[in-house]
View 1 (cartoon, helix red, strand yellow):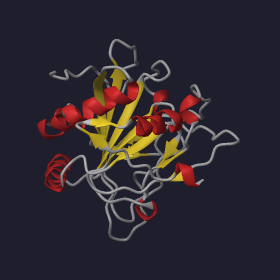
View 2 (tube, rainbow, N blue to C red; view 1 turned 30 degrees about the vertical axis):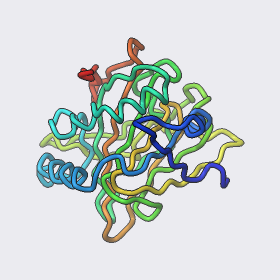
View 3 (cartoon, rainbow, N blue to C red; view 1 turned 120 degrees about the horizontal axis):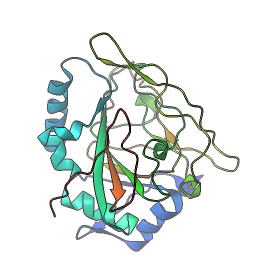
Length: 247
């Protein structure tokens, strides 16, 4: 479906054009190019490697590291989030994914992110920062447009994370509580570059396949936001909590 292929949002003085905002509102996702510089992306990768200590897996609340915290509360990113959601958006957490070449870790089932925080419809926003170029070959995000209008869908409840004896997080199953794509909806494969960000409505169905490329990494920081004063469930693992925007 051509009209649902990659959509670039243009910024004018830190704001988006109305026509571009409408794309997000209609489809539940959008892509903004060149938000974070090449230099800053490389610094974040280096910091993430230090934090990983050779254990390249999912890491919760990476924003507790100062370098990633700066991205979480960056004013231009917050301004875009506020404009998209027509509300003041407050950071509540982050998840960092390492996906090495030829890795079995980092895949996800079709799911809605709102299953975890259980926020009111339209209150929860996810922003993904790509730290590597990504396409189908290394498992770039796939989305299902217009599913943002759906409520919380039934899921197949199963554990997708477990820990070994050292506390290392392991992936037991594809990440996310799996849901079915309703009839009449078609998935779209995204492609993006290092430094691009993806805005994703909390109810938009999405997934990522494993990285089957022999050489390319796929590293991404997902940052989570809630509308100011709207409720959410902190969760047992992520332990989402309000983070001061400092503005």
